[in-house]
Image (cartoon, rainbow, N blue to C red):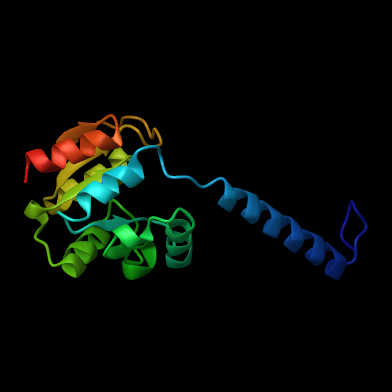
Length: 162
């Protein structure tokens, strides 16, 4: 028996699994792209090759993109499982560039995490843009080439360096 609820192991497992399922349903239902992101992607997709690079596992990354109806905008979805290396390691960045068939100096990483997204992209020679409209991960001293306050700024920045 498991204490302090005095549940048999199989009953505990059933309750635990139901709780995990309920949590994941609620979490998924709260996923929303930042305001303006879909408009940004609609504008960039015809002009640029677009990819996602995330430390999430492959299943979670694809699931989130599908749920938010954003997967259609990206040619490549790079995940932790592609290299088994987390950002800012250079391997994930190199792998996405290879799949896109793009040289690092001709690519720009747009990310909201200076220490992982911006630092890693700079290490391989990519241009960088800090997305201030994303989650705020603080300032670790890593400086991006560009700063976007809104998704619309990303469109402007990308077109200015084309």
